[in-house]
Image (cartoon, rainbow, N blue to C red):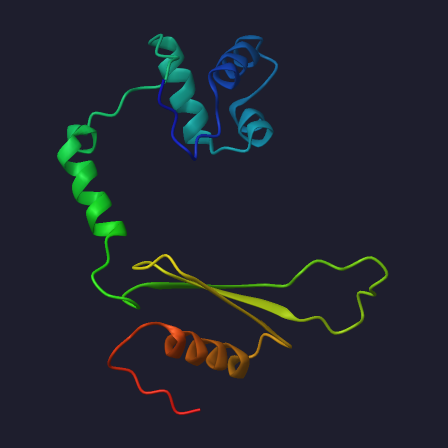
Length: 153
């Protein structure tokens, strides 16, 4: 059974919507508010129940089911040709340590991952300003094995 990752209504939710609607005590607006979906979604569920289509539908797009598509997508996404072609950056503020106050200044963890070599670069900097991010980026690029770079610091 294939369920979309953003699905809000499960099979049991659809059955409950139908049951509540059949009791004549719940209106469509109330059902939409209760299940946190739009009114057209409720109408669609009611229509599908009347047609007895309670199970999720399989995808009709056959292109995504082929092996060629999966291999092409994997090659395009993960195989980079040189270091630094695609680098992922992220920052994280570490959790408070035991005995540390929330008012004390805390450092930030900067992380970069190179998609070519899968190398991980980290740095702990005192703040999350553009100056700190630029210095981390410069240090990361200079520490990568790039032949045509100039590091002037």
